[in-house]
Image (cartoon, rainbow, N blue to C red; front, side):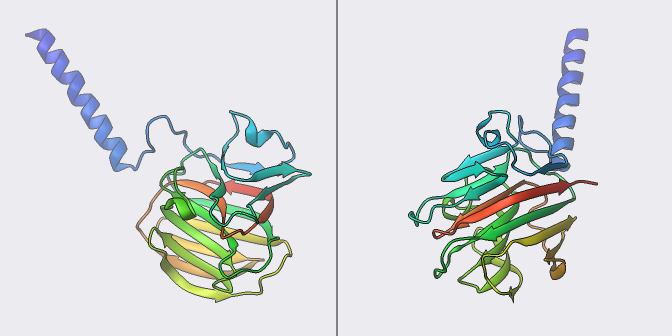
Length: 217
C-alpha cells in the first residue's frame, strides 16, 4: 500500500512538472536554451565543429572573418545557418550582412527568428518569422511562415551590395526592427513565442555575414 502511494506521488509530480514546462513553452527535449553570444566568424572551422552553435544546410563557406550563405547556381538548394539553441523569451539580434548575388526576381536573404525547428526554412517549409531583404519585394519585408503572412507592410529600401546593419528586438509579441539605425518595423504578432535564430537565402541569393550578436535580458 505504501509503495503504491509513493508510486502515485512520483507520477503526479512528474506530470505536474511536464505540464508546467509545456505551459512555459519549454524547448523540445535535448535542445539547449539560447544564451547571449557574439560571433565574428574568425575561425573558418567553427561551423563544421560538432560543438558549434550553428547548424548548416546547403552551400555555406567560412573564411576571412566572413560566412557566405547561398548558391548562385542552384535555384532549388535550401541554404542557411541557424542556432542549435532554442530561444524561449525576449532577445535582441544584431546582424551585419551584405547581399552579393545578382538581381533576380526573388533573390535575396532572410533573417529568421522564433523558428519552430531546424528542418525547414524557405523551400523546406519554414515555420517562424523572417525579416527579408529581397529583390522581389524591392526592399524589406516582415513575414510569418508558413504561408508568407505579412506581419507589417513592406518597406522599400535600396537593394545594393553594401554592408548593412540589421537589428531585431523581440519583446513578448512585439517585434521592432532597425535598418542601419533607422526603425523600419514595429509590429505585434503572437503566433510564435520561441524558437531558433537563422540566416538563409532563396532563389539563388547569396549573402555574406561577418557579425552576429544575440543579447538576452
